[in-house]
Amino acid sequence: MEVPILKQGPYLIASIQSALSDNDLMELRDSLVNQVGKFRSRGVIVDVTALDVMDSFATRTLRDIAHMIRLRGAEMVIVGIQPEVAFALVRLGLKLEGVSTALDLEEGIFYLDRMTRLRGKEARTRAQ
Amino acid sequence: MRNEGWQKAPASGRAASPGKNGRVAIRDVSIPVQSDLDIVGARHQGRSLAAALGFSPGDATLIATAISELARNIILYAKRGQIILKPVAQSDSSGLVIVASDEGPGIPDVRRALEDGYSTSQSLGLGLPGVRRLMDEFEIVSEVNRGTKVTVKKWRR
Image (tube, each protein chain N blue to C red):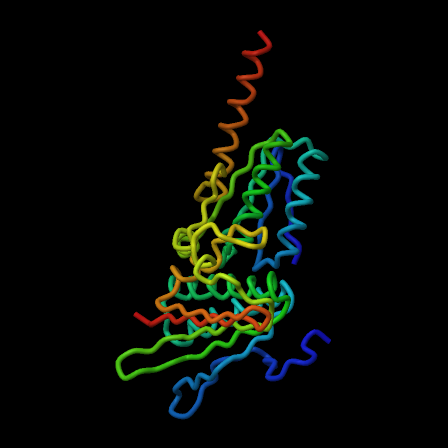
């Protein structure tokens, strides 16, 4: 099941629609890392609202994606982690270290707006 | 054929079917595990069965997550194996038993495999201790070159 990636202004939004196999997750990783360059995106939102299970592989892959996106010069935020999924992650002892999360799509966009504006300001300050 | 050589492959994965007096008759489900798609299928069946048994959505998620980790271990270390989901009932409580078994290489040091952070593969090494924390009861039997069998249980609250 392929994850649709929408281009929304300077951002890419990957909206996971159903349970994903390991292969689907790796495909999502590869296409996001490529598309962020193709569209010169400033930020990426991965919406996991529809994911009813996040196991160790899913968590690790999402963390990898976030770090790779940052290496490509953009910001990433994961939105929509469900309460039960959050509980299971904590029980499993899995951490999304260094990965930004937000409640939902709206908050995710708000977060990216703030982060990308900060980056722009820093760059301008350095240029002066 | 992906299921070749495996008996009792679930035809449609329906674990619960309405029986006499409208009660739900629930039987064991056996799921062959040999590809990453089977991991998705196994946890899906586990969640449906947990819901049919009356587990809360939160506990059903813990069960589905545990199944996912156990199925992943099978693929990672033994390539193939099976997961059996067994509803259990005692006088005052009911629950779900999950048995994950394979005929893979086995685990040389089971005690170490149950420590956080230990792994012989490139995974995070949190598989087994994590599963233990998700469930109420946990048992593992492993023999080098013979295989591994993990049995976990969750009681309905």
